[in-house]
Amino acid sequence: MRRKIPSTAALVCFEAAARHESFTKAAQELALTQGAVCRQIGSLESFLNVDLFRRSRRGVKLTEAGLSYSRQVAAQLDAVERDTLSVMRQQGANVIELAVVPTFGTQWLLPRLKDFQQRHPEVTVNLTNRTRPFLFADTTFDAAIYFGDGDWSGTQSQRLMGENPLPVCSPALLNGEGMLDARRIASMPLLQQTTRPYAWRQWFHSVGMSIEGDMTGPRYELFSMLAQAAMHEMGIALIPPFLIQRELEEGRLVVANRHALISDKAYYLMIPERKVESASLRAFRDWLADQARQYLASGSNSESTLSL
Image 1 (cartoon, rainbow, N blue to C red):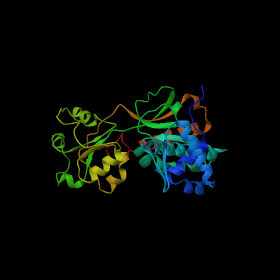
Image 2 (image 1 turned 135 degrees about the horizontal axis):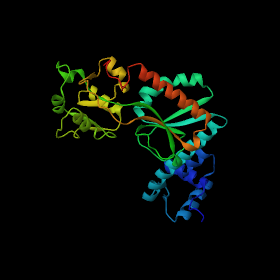
Image 3 (image 1 turned 90 degrees about the vertical axis):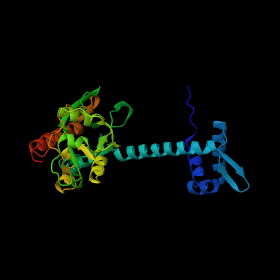
Image 4 (image 1 turned 120 degrees about the vertical axis):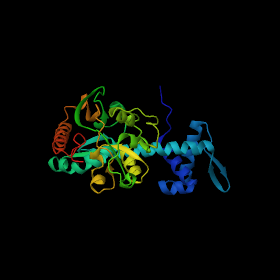
């Protein structure tokens, strides 16, 4: 069955005319005549059976339908342009499109990625933030780094490291008390992490406590947001030390209690089964696993908190 898709030329003319609210300016931008723009938009309105513009002697104005449609069309044309440029850039190139949880990618992976580039200059690694699992078949991603149990249908997993967060806060929040016991922590504002909704409850249970309000408090999606909130004295956060190493070293955050939440989940590299034979992905997997082993062996990781 034929799809209900207007011509690209008509959509491009409409997007430009909607952005300028002027057929004349759209024609100038697209190097067309004003008459050509008018015809394209007229054909689009006929195709849709909807008036997109109100015409008058003073010019044109978008209708409500036109305004709504222009926003959708602009977003879709931008996406098509990005995809087109991506294909053009990748022509003859060896590229890995990697989905990665944001703070891990920024704080742990990126500082090490130069080493991979030096070892494999023929491979380009592009990073895109993704906080939750997805279907590889619905995306252009070649692999993903995510936090979970490693069970992702249709993929092969490589465990990297655990998380095991500690309670941290601003030094000012301690008010000279030094380390805080669990009961004292329970009386303070608890900063929550959106993708770890039970983290504080699990932490209190791990020290033999059950408290009310363990899931109450400001909620943030990223660990980097939690760290900022904690540094601004908004409460105590549970954060893996390896994600805030600089903040701890500089004293902007301090460990409020040395008891870590030992999680049965971890960070994994996930590769779709249909791509496991890719030479570039194998090279990246081996390099990443080696980097994780070195970091764990250094004793400054989230699975060894003795140095903190």
